[in-house]
Amino acid sequence: MDRRYQVFISSTFTDLIDERREVMQALLEMDCLPAGMELLPAGDTDQWTLIKGVIEQSDYYLVILGGRYGSVTEEGVSYTEKEYDYAVELGIPVMGFVPAEPDGSPVGKTDRSDAAAKKLAEFREKVQLKMTKKWKNAEDLGSKVTRGLMHLIKNNPRPGWVRGDQAMMPETRAEIAELNAKIAQFEKKEVESSVGPPVQMDDAFAHGEEEVELSLRHKGFDYGYKEEDGDLTYTWDEIIEVLGPFMIDEAPEPALRETFNKHMLSDIQSDTEDGWATGWREESVEITDRSWGAIIVQLRALRLITTGTKKRTASDKAVYWKLTQAGDEYLVSLRAVSTTAKNVERPE
Figure 1: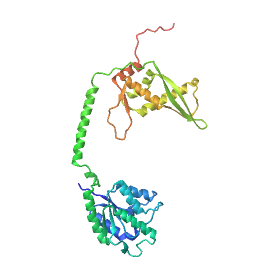
Figure 2: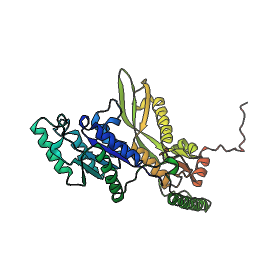
Figure 3: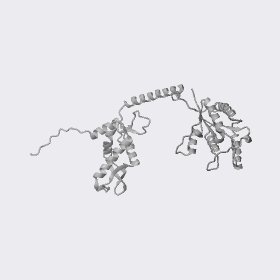
Figure 4: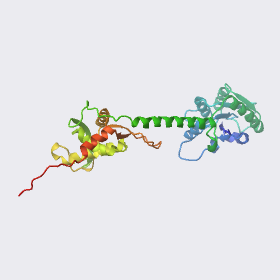
């Protein structure tokens, strides 16, 4: 597979313009993707954040030392050394290129202060603890980079970049096909199990006219934001009557929860004797997580609901619920209207 590698070039800039150009040309001839400060876009993001992002995306890191330590950060460390330390910290394979004659840099391309020269010497010693090559001039540096990077790639394999239409290797395609076959088998087993004996409601748990107290938060605006906490009491049959119709087909849990929130709000607005505030604008009710969880657990324990099984998009992270056969039958018994054969006497 045709794979290209992104290579970050780190160095001082104004004194090594020709050298950097030669290195970039060498990298392009190797079908590599050079990255460096001159290629960073202008924008509102601070310089170091941009540099870090490019280094993180790079496969290899090259540092070129000349006769200058370079501009320093607030910590007193040059950007070149800070970049080098960050690449080493990330575990990116690095290679250094140092002058064959450190004292032979032309006038104007060396540090003027002794402090900067000392920091450069210390940085050069740090770089030479790892793989380094010495260069004499721009042309020599280009050839050294070519040979050095080939050695670095051979001994330190990296992911690199590939064309989108070539990204999937034959082994990956085979693995995906195998996984799809397994998924199909699981789906087949699930369908076969779903047509087995019908699940019966487990009436060992609270149900019917037995009551449960649910906590909620009542919110709205009345000369400012208002909220109050409280409880409402419902029978399990009422809860099933409210939620059940929406779970005949699969329904996402957030939608079910919102349905019950609206039902509770309606109860608050219609029951003015229960101490709830009234007349708020943008009024809403939100059942607490604990109470909502109690509803879901109870309906599952009763074997009235189960999780949905339909395929969904990868971005859909919601939990879906649907009625079991027992749940569907129980809902019908609650909501269906039966006919009677009673005779009703008409008033005279």
